[in-house]
Length: 104
Image (tube, rainbow, N blue to C red):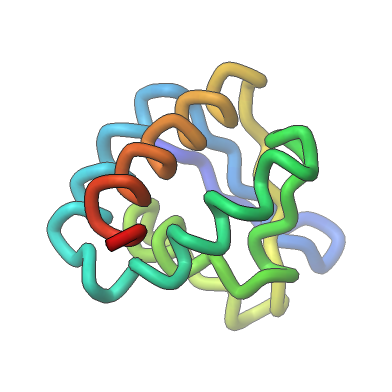
C-alpha cells in the first residue's frame, strides 16, 4: 500500500507497482466519475515523459486520492514518488480505460 507523509509542507505519495491494482479497481468501479480525468491524463501524460506529469496542475488527482486513501486538502498538492515502471503501468491502464470508456 502507498505510503503518504507530509514533509516540508508537501504531501509525498510513495507508490509502488502493487498500488496499480487498487487504482484500477477504483477507476472501474466509478468509471463515470473519472472519465474526464482519465481523458486528460491520457492526453497530457506522454507530453511530460510520463514520470514528470503533474496530476495536481491538471486537476487529475481525484482517482489517486480516492484509490490510495489520501487528501491534498491540508497542503493543496502532492508529489508522486514511484519507481519508473509505475508510471508506464499507470499510463497503460489509463490508456486502456480511455479506449474502453472515454473515447466513445
